[in-house]
Length: 341
Ligand SMILES: *Cc1c(COP(=O)(O)O)cnc(C)c1O
Image 1: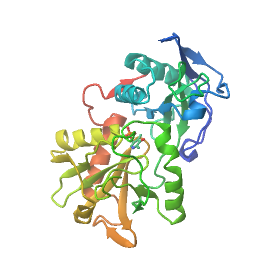
Image 2: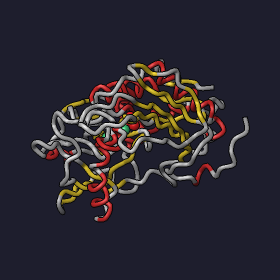
Image 3: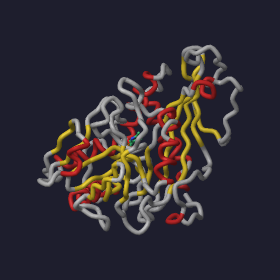
């Protein structure tokens, strides 16, 4: 298979159309057999449920080339499971987990020419999603749905090393108690756009959201979970029903305990204790871990001791171990690496 002529290290994080995508339709209570298509456009009725009442969910994962030349995906079974939970919360039909894994595998295989080569730092981003497709005007769930998967090559998240970022404590809320913060739904992102544009305009890279009910506890950012490192090298991550359960964060906790012998804690994290942590990072598929150097709360600066030049030492160890597992330099826990071809 001949790779496409793409300047892999300079493509950024944008949409680039690839050759094939997967589509399956749900109608009269069942999913059809589904398959690949070349048509990148979706034609919908003007009253489609997704357009009127935002009934849509998604996932995000990556395929990449390991050192020995295999194309692999990282823990797609976790994305399949999470999408089941998202579907249930938005009254959408479940797309079976084994079919999800088959669909992403087929899509990656069909676009193998777009999977960046080993060492480029670039990856093939995979976007599975599902939406209500038939006309809905009275407020209720749609009767028909479409599940799709497309892929797009994305560049290395960090060009020239992972520099710590500065974030702010947001005055906006991301998710309500008992709301939809724990599922991967487009609606959580629609309402975060104003908050992120505001933060960017003020010169911050990201928002730290606090719990909406008391505004005393750390939740997450718009699209990444927090990890903190205590001064005695414990890995702490906030626990809350309104946080999206990041697969990267859950993998980091496992790696911390099982590979690095670090203690971990998933518990409520008061904003008041943030000033006492040694390191802070944001975790998600895109960057794996993005180090945070400074957190600003209405003019009060919390400067993490790890500073603004580099990732903190423990964060770096976690980052190197997890990316080493992903790239095949370090033996992966059973089932973490799914070989596509
Ligand atoms: C997708 C997402 C994350 C990161 O999850 P990963 O599975 O690690 O990619 C974190 N927070 C939110 C709100 C998300 O939507």
